Length: 347
Ligand code: ADP
Ligand code: MG
Image 1 (cartoon, rainbow, N blue to C red):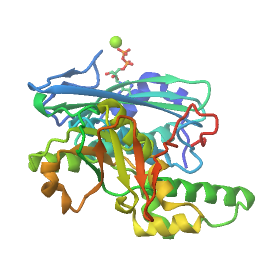
Image 2: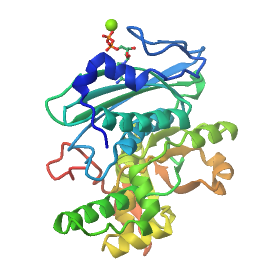
Image 3: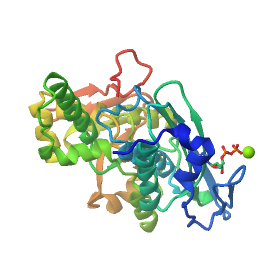
């Protein structure tokens, strides 16, 4: 494959190459790339803004995360945060720190992923910044979204008795990471070994190409259902449950037998000698939405194919318990992802 050095294009040439054919679709984007700043029109709504910084060696490992997937994921994790406010994502800006280890072609790949995510989610890329870095890749994405003023949902609105609901299934992204780590070590020991990945398409996709639940935000709106509190599952369910509880000054009871897991992910966890429940509670990066609704809304969520009612809020603040399958209640432990924790995996 061809390798063009970034120095051959220079900063402005590179920006041009990556962004010259970006088009704008949103009525709220008045002005995008090419000026000193983008100009947005909130259309009478509330604006939500969120940012995520991804550093090579801390948040991703390019030996198994292809650049296109990385670009896609970097956008999606931000859109997920916009969704968690019950808002619809509308714009993103992208900050890039790049070392000369990366060729122009590699950055084309990264941008192919960024732009695919923008297309899939109908979000406008309206700006960014590009700079060199002494080593590694740093990727900062900021996303904006719009929501009606009376539809904003924070982490702090849950009250005693509210039902705890999660979208989709849990633990898949964590199992995907375990599979990739295993194949990486097999490959390091025997570089000619063929990776055994084909049986694990779902878990790998959950890890490498997560999606933001814009569909859930839309469907909740269509059902006329405004959650009392909401958060996205980026660090692991247990940790997110505690965030909702702490912000809302309530506790939660979570029922182990209600936790949603894909059957194949369950099987793989077993093969890896991991407790599937622990994968659901502590494995991060599922990017599902976790929210609470009033008990009177039970009929709207009970048979919804994308939603599981997994517990309820209790009056005692900071009382977080897991009702296990065989009966006893145990304290819910957050062993979520923490990039500053010394034993955090370097992924
Ligand atoms: P300034 O010097 O005013 O900050 P730049 O020369 O850095 O402007 O950027 C020129 C234009 O290109 C701006 O609209 C900026 O938002 C956009 N831009 C720069 N880098 C990127 C990038 N990596 N992705 C998308 N847009 C970018
Ligand atoms: Mg300027």
